[in-house]
Image 1: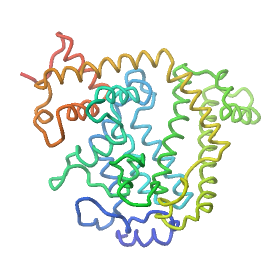
Image 2: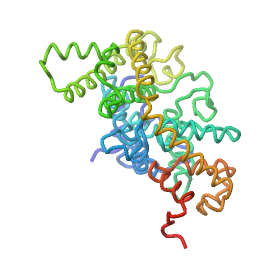
Image 3: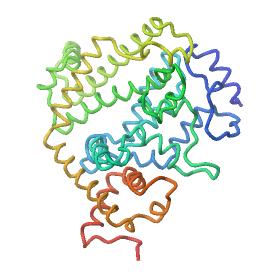
Image 4: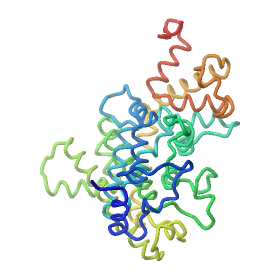
Length: 386
């Protein structure tokens, strides 16, 4: 049997000098006995996968509310796709795949129901009480809200995973903020961050075409799409639109990943990066795109914003989402007795507003829709309540 110590030694010899090694982790807030055959980062990944917040991602919106169709991405499928891209990049760069995968799988745990619109609504509702931001909520979940161990609250993840989840350097909750000279997170965290953007844009293209919000004629104005379609048409004549969509989206992902790999290796040399600490103290972010691909990716983002995220169909869903979350929040504030007892009495988790925010942000789309109906529609029954 391969022991944890064997895996740690293997990391020392097989990973790049600037990769984070599990045996050199800054450990956890609460000391724990090490596992006999799993590294610290492997345990973190497994804790994320088995968390309640991770399971709820199955019914949380990416762009389309869950009942719009079974095909569309949810936060769960998106997180899995981000983890896949992250592992591919890390394997090529000889980075720590287990650490990066744990970050990738945890990066959306704090997302509320109804996508980014849900975040905007909760941030507005919490404006006078500290606001709401999904990265900070992800940290709050893994550090406090998950309850799976008798010895401590949260999942007790390693410092390096918390660093990667936080993302924003100037956020006081970011572990980086406490260490003088640190500017950027580990390269594994940077990979997970860019993989998130790559998956988000490419797969929203896929869902946008499937939902008829986007068409090929409009997409040909976008360089990343146009260039790949031209190359595809040279190889195949009269290719079925469905196959063409899959192939172009796949090739766009490949273009972005390939450029990221090449540019990141150049930046590692440019900034003289030799260790994981050098990555954090570098004068610039080591992970990134070339200027050419960055411009093309920005063009794609702007296109999706204009033609998909602001589309009438999406705006109608966002209007309903805002109505649901606002009214649920309002009902709980007006009558806290409507809350579950565990939420109402658990003052350790902060003032009432923050506890309501925690509860609402943890809802799935389906649960939030059902709760709105139970609160505001007299003919809806509260099953199980006397």
